[in-house]
Length: 128
Image 1 (cartoon, helix red, strand yellow):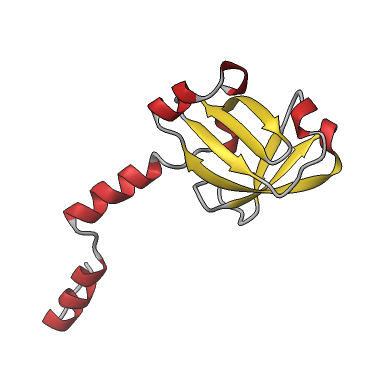
Image 2: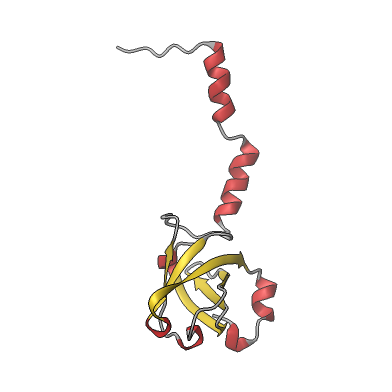
């Protein structure tokens, strides 16, 4: 039988690493601000600099790029996180791939998750 014995200094050091109750709530709230690219259900591109994607949980995210040729004509897209994460959050970079935009991926940035009021304020043709 093995026994783990920790000194009071070790316990204090370990407790400093443990999340506080407030931190756990904040991290869950932050998780709602992110999405998995494989859960994108629809998208619209009102111009070659802006893309809106709707996720499986009905969240809508605004994605921006300096310029992505023919993004408005895209019938399908794929988003690949640049950092290798399985989720995309505001501020993250990603590669946008689409037959409409050509063989080279466009570099995009996840701008933000829209509120319900912001989604409703979008022109109907721009709502994913």
